[in-house]
Amino acid sequence: MKKRTDKQLAKCIAPILERWLKRLDLYNTWFVRLEIVCGASLPEADDADSTVLASIDFSDPYKRAEISLNRELAATMSDADLDHNLLHELVHVLMRPMVHAAWEHIPKADRKHFQRAHESVTDTFTNLLLWDSKGERNR
Ligand SMILES: [Zn+2]
Image 1 (cartoon, rainbow, N blue to C red):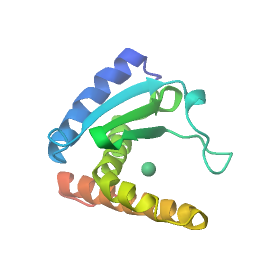
Image 2: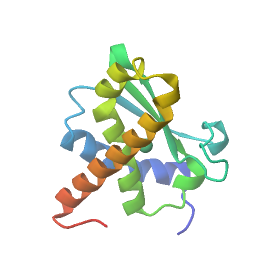
Image 3: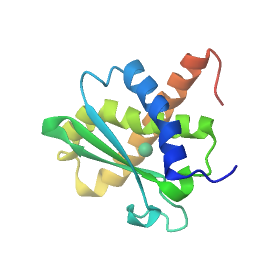
Image 4: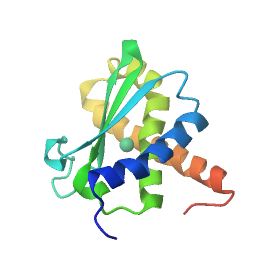
């Protein structure tokens, strides 16, 4: 796939975000912003070999979520992969109130385990939503 410029990427992302924000009813509950950033500014992945595609910061009292998207990785991604990955981030927003409420009560030693489970559930919901919207199984 040809490398997209930031402008092309933003143009591709806008309708995807809009569609999922509506579908997940996040328009009425959260203020979600997306920024295209240099990959080096993102936090490092757990295993040093992989690169983080996106990270998300929350301001819980204000129900604000800011997604940072790795420019270098996103620029060569297909529309379908962008769709999948942006939905994944928005499912994190949907689940945030539960994660926020639970986090402080999880012993530090168990947080990695919790985070892995959280990612797995996020993936499951993402796949179910994609399946649902296309009327067919997505993987
Ligand atoms: Zn995730």
